Structures are given as C-alpha cells and as structure tokens.
Length: 171
Image (cartoon, rainbow, N blue to C red; front, side):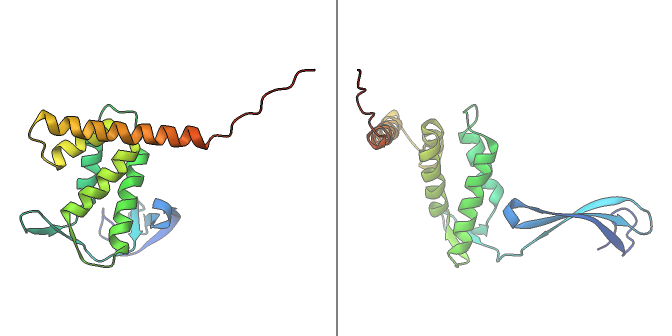
C-alpha cells in the first residue's frame, strides 16, 4: 500500500475494525517514511452488476441511486438514515444473491417500492409517483387508497393478534 502523502511503499497497521456488518474492514495505517496516518478499506470484490433500463440501455449498478431515491422519498419524514441504509444493503444483497450479472431497473424499483410501502406510506406514494410516472390525480388517489388499505389491514391484523385480557375478579 503506497502512502497517499509521500508515495512510500511501506506502512504499518495501527488498528483494524470490522464495519458494514462484516462486509468490510477499516484499517488505520502509519507510513514508515513520513509517519503520517491514513485509512484504508478492505472489501470483498463482487461481480459488477449491470442494470437494464426501460429503453434497453445498460449501465453499471450504482448503489447511490437507490440511496438517493430513498432519501428523496423520505425527505421530512420520521425515518432514520440508518433504516434507509439497511434497505439499500438488503436490496443490494438480494441482487447479488440472485447470481445473475444483469438486473432490470424495474425489479430494483419494485423492491424499493415494497420496502417503502412497509416503512412509510407517504414516502411510498412519493416514490411511486415518480417511478410509475403518474400523469394525473387519479393515479395518486389510487396509490393513496392502496396504502390506506394496507395500513388498515396491518393495524387490524396487529390488533387481532394481541392477547385479550381476562376480566378481573373482585372479592
């Protein structure tokens, strides 16, 4: 590893830490020549995925595009950035687990919408409106009513699953 400051080729590792749930290692290093410190990251090199766009173009997979889409959809919503990072990690893991080198943009978009539908209905409608290219208010209404129905169904299912308390006995 060459020092980024003086280009000397030898250094020593001061500290190593596992990051990103074991997917990478962060190393603090010190150059033997100039004694400056720098950080390196060691990650598993995965095969580069290619995304097939709607118009047939192919472009390299970019994790940052998913992250930006989620951040935009969740702007001013009570959703922690860590949760969004977890969604991106989960989608990326799923894409790599499929084994193929090419994935359609539509499949990625559907995974994002599924995650947002469960996370936040407003963020879901925001993302869906751009992703599905809503052209009129009717499409917004339909997406909102679907989100409401899912939320009511989840609320009812949760309430039905809660144990009922037994009536109290008085002496």
